[in-house]
Length: 338
Image: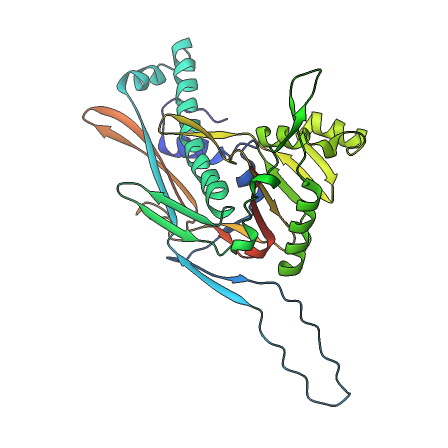
């Protein structure tokens, strides 16, 4: 990582630009990024088609095929702009190059700048899991109001009845005292796979849930015996992924964010998010910078630093203009399983 001993703007900007989203934030890494240099977000949502071509005869006029079922979404970008202020004491020690205190001050600045970058990343992650994948993003801050409907049909957001829920108790293990469950998970997953194959003309291949939901699933009676192979068990223990179970990769994702003094998982308890990754169904659109200091063609993340004279301080800022676009809502299932 480059030296930031004097917190020079070009150097600190270089540090910030080298910071990437942590691999642990899986949502950001799932969505491909795409520059979108337009003042607003506007795109078509595409529905799958099951229609066949119609036979014809040589030398006859071609049949006119109907257009795909298309919806339309127009929205503003999600805009984040945050900064950190480095006090005169930190600046003093940064100028005393070669001292132990300088190294500690550099480490402290790097730590704070990384936190600034991570705060932006976590908000993007929130908008993906608690917005796009749920079908609706609502933000109700004092100065920002957001309500976006991503167009996921009600049939693709099932809520299981009490008798069908995954935590519907069948009995208790006499040795461990732990409850075990009896929901027909395989039948439910098969029905959701069929729904997506009919509506979206693709096959579900991904399932995402948090660790608590995964524990409830694994205590279902259907998993007693040889339902999961030794290879799948090893993969689960090493990677938190059960590969190829019923044709899907089951991913356990347990990261959380803090809001109102509470720690909240990005994927709620009792929710499983299924999607078909084929055909680029979603993207992270990166919009134009709203800062006067940004280059004319700048999109997505923009950074800058500047010096305040009274009181003396250096400020570092990160701005992000983005939108998680869901082009193919029929490729998503947002299931509340308990």
